[in-house]
Amino acid sequence: MSYGATSKSSSRPRRLKLLRPYLLVLPAAVFLGLFVYWPVVLVTFLSFFEWNMVSPQMTFVGLENFASRFADPAFYRLLFQSLLYIAIALLGNFLLPVGLAMLTLQLGGRCGDVYQSLIFTPTVVAVSVGALLWQYIYLPTGGLLNAFLGLFGVPGNNWLNDPATALGSIGVITAWKFMGFNYLIALAGLMAIPKEYLEAARVDGAAGWSFVRWVLIPLLMPTVLFVMLTAILQALPNAFVPIEILTRGGPNDASNNLLYATYQSAFQFFQIGKAGAEAVMLMLLLGGAAVWQFRILDRSLTYDR
Image: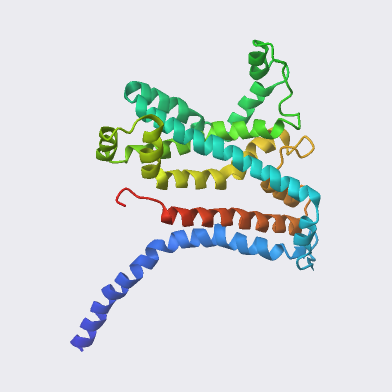
C-alpha cells in the first residue's frame, strides 16, 4: 500500500517535469494560433469564394479570384509599385542605416552619442504624427520643402498630389520614421565585432574602403542580412499609415501598393474573395523573399569561421 502511494507521488513530479516545457510555450502557441495561423487559414479559405461580407451566402469560385487578378493590368502596376517601395526601403532602411552605423563607430565619444540620438528620435514618434508632420513639409504653398528649394531658385511642387512624386514622397516618410531601429541593430552588430580582428586588419594595412569591404562587411554579414530582411518584409506595412492619412493610394493609384490595395478590396469595396487572393499572393511573395534570405543567412560568415 505504501509502495503504491510512493510510486504515485514520485510520478507526479516526473509528469510535471515532462509537461513544464509545453506549459511554458502554451501562451505563445495560443497567441500564434489565434492571431497568426488561424487568420492565414481563414484568408486562404476566403480567397476561393465570392462574398461581400454582408450576404449570408458565399459562392465558391475556385481560382477565379486569382485568375482575375493576373488578367488585370492594374495588378501588375501595383506589383511594380510594391517593388518600388521595397527598393526605397532597401535604400533608406538598409543601406543608409548600415552606412550611418559605420560612420558613428568612426566618430565615437560624445559626438557619436549625439549622432545616435538624432538618428533614433524619429523612431519614437507615432507614425500618424510623423505623417502629419511631413504633410506640412510637403505643402505646395508654405511647405518647408518648397521654401527650401525656392532659396536655390528651384520651382516647388505639389509632392503628394503629383503622380510622379507621390510614391517617392511616401517612401521618404517611411525611411525617416523606421531607419533608426535598423540603425541601432547595425550599430550593435558593429560594436559586437571583436576589437582584435579590427586591430589586426589595421596592422596589416587595411584602411578606407578596403577596410570596409574586406573586413567590416564580412564580419557584419549576419547583421547586414537581418537588417535587409527586416527592411524588405516591413516595406509595405510601414507605408500603410502614411498612405492612409496622406494619399489614400492616389493620385490615380500612383502611391498604392499590394498591401493597401488588399485593404481597399476588403474594407472599402467589400470584395472579400478578391482581397483574400491578393493577401495570399502577397504572403507568397514576401514569404519567398524571407526563405531566400534565410538560406543566405545560413551560409553567411560568422566571426569564428
